[in-house]
Length: 279
Image (cartoon, rainbow, N blue to C red; front, side):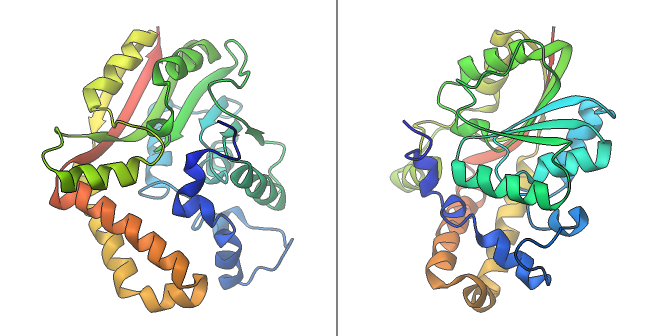
């Protein structure tokens, strides 16, 4: 499947990648204006919990000035730019979808950060990463959508220097599906893959690739976050319709309601953080 045809393009966020420019307009920016990283980081963190998991990655990976870091599934580069800005490391922002890649390059350039963040577009499974190129790898709620996870983890293992570390935050399944309503919600959420691994599944895949693994469950926070996000969008629907249009807002709400069900009503999906070291 090509990058252009990938089913992930059906996800509401990726159909409206230009939304970031509307958000920047609300802050007073115009086309091609230079950007302040401190303004942009309030808008470009596409994963749950904003900057907090990136700060957790910085601490757990012990990212230092000059380190080489690979960001898997970088989207429009939010986490990559913040990481490079905060630690003065060098980040390779790898992204599958060309629209995300294009916008990410533009934002990085407007922030004056092309010297510290390099954008690469392609399938992470087939992209040439080099052998022992990176000190660290990070990823935020992306690995779920990689179909061949054993191959991915082997690829990342090979790309890390000896003793290199990987941090990723990810959704996982907390129990078996019990009825058709749960299955329908999970199918809608999964979109381009057939199954959602459990925490133990991920741990085993990492160990099979040669990593030493530590896991921190964060499912309670996922439940709280998805419920709070639904309340926000439900209560401020009129504001969001004014900014983004009714079709886009209704699409967002469908996804938001689904994740709330999965993480709250059904208790089917949670998430956590994985720290793995190359041994």
